[in-house]
Image 1 (cartoon, rainbow, N blue to C red):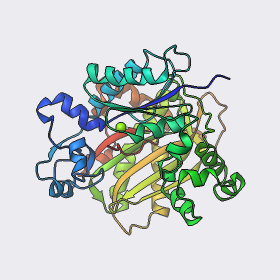
Image 2 (cartoon, helix red, strand yellow):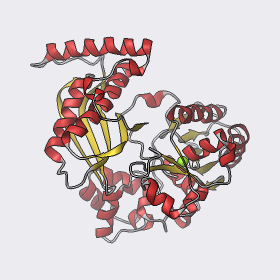
Image 3 (cartoon, rainbow, N blue to C red):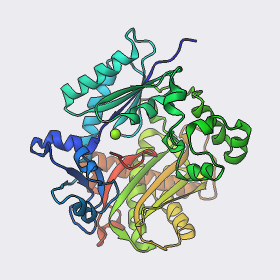
Length: 406
Ligand SMILES: [Mg+2]
């Protein structure tokens, strides 16, 4: 089989860069996109290159950021505009191949194996074209698999191209820490460290069986990825809607201090998820809740559902139940994400449950609500719980997409 040609293009400081395009007067200034302009509650969602150089990090409070950089310009996020810019990026990528797989709003893999041009040339063209037509910069990784292409796009930023080949990956990749590999999260990195495995090279030289014993199937994946053996295909554009999960998350305007406050947010999140599931004709067999506390530590739990569902009410109840049972409230909650997981197509045979009829009724009610929302907009209907004091926080769409980096 011919060697694959894979690119990974990552927009640099995406939110902040888009803000600078919209407000050219911000160019050359340190800019941070923050959840709220208020010092006490806002946190940094994204920062410009200049802001980054002053030490500002995603997730800091506005006050911390201002302390590091008194000249910092704080702007609120415009998610709908970022989505439009994201589409424009996809359009440029689509000129080269149908195999364009987005990863979050600002990253994409491209499979350009069938293009006649050398992949390095395509990468340079992309970089130039994006800059010229959209006014923002991208970093592009070029490699023979998705994992190394993604890694390559992280190695040099902003506005750069990095190639990782079969010949040079041992020299370029193996000295890097394991956490630079996609899918090697914090818990995995820590566990690897406890075995004395710190670099990707050390990971590559491990016995595969040992990793599988320690990490299950993921251990085998890690070993493959470290050795340049990742062979997962790049999806065709649009196919990624066959999502493995439908998630929605918020960074809260004010930290949540108890279950009652969390309930309001969970209800809001699951409304969006229910709507999206019905749009995609998918139903969930499980729910996952991820919490980031105000010390910025993450925790995540998941549970199976009795029967598959598209119902926001069922998802809300299940996620509330998870939070009630699992979260200890040692700290307040800063950010919450709910994901519908173990998805299947609605056409799949439906099992009758004890609550089958109720669930069906609920589904029809929510379907009707979707129609009204479609006609009159999102604001037309709000669950009663949201009509109280609770302020709806900023939200971002996400598969398991992490907070915007950069
Ligand atoms: Mg980026």
